[in-house]
Image (cartoon, rainbow, N blue to C red):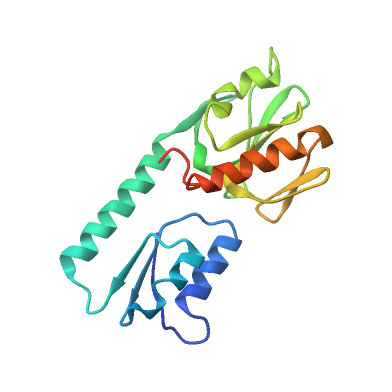
Length: 193
């Protein structure tokens, strides 16, 4: 959760918010400012809320409570992963993508961590079926499932996740994945919340 003033030295709060989005952050951003002139600009950073100063204490706490509830709701939806050390719950909003790696499913998480499942005894699609029930996830060929929330580009033969990872995309799926990605963002891009 970010609480930013719009007017700051060097970079404005709007610029910081846009940069956070470019880096893949979907955390709620609450802007504080003395002028309503920047309200429209705050949409560039997909602001959660815009509060005028002087800040009314009850309004601020109400907005913070709503943002915290949104974050909690996002975290509540998790994928159980059977690992060698037991079951690991990975919140769906922290899964960038899943790949078939040999005979296991490798989950790539937003913090840079990877979690490997136990050896798969069935098809990869059966392992990730719960993910594919969520509108955020799309199957990209037979070896990858990607969280659309973190996709930054869909090009011929690949899609980019979080500006760092290139996922191969069969040509026959490019149009379909572009469409799903567009629909995801047209519907708000906020996952299940």
